[in-house]
Image 1: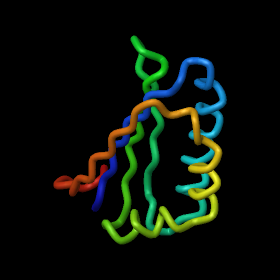
Image 2 (image 1 turned 90 degrees about the vertical axis):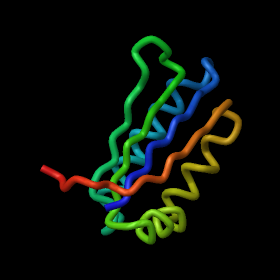
Image 3 (image 1 turned 90 degrees about the horizontal axis):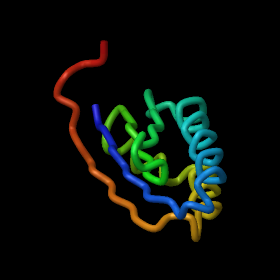
Image 4 (image 1 turned 30 degrees about the vertical axis):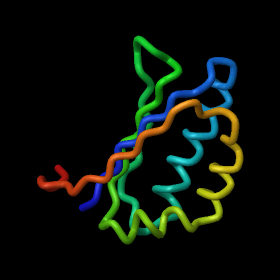
Length: 98
């Protein structure tokens, strides 16, 4: 399994708009992508402008394919100007789900 941990720092005045967009993106990813089994959106308790995503894919190819879907491209276009910092970690999951 392949895991993505992504951190997004969002401009404070765009936080609620981003939250709605990322929640929809997470739902679409799990529902529309056969290779995406999990997509969790978290928001830092102390810093509400920091969002952390935890995504699980079948493999790295499924994640790379994730970035070709229309809903992903629409999300990326919609968040233009909202993100002030971004970090993405690509990990291989060593323990099985469950």
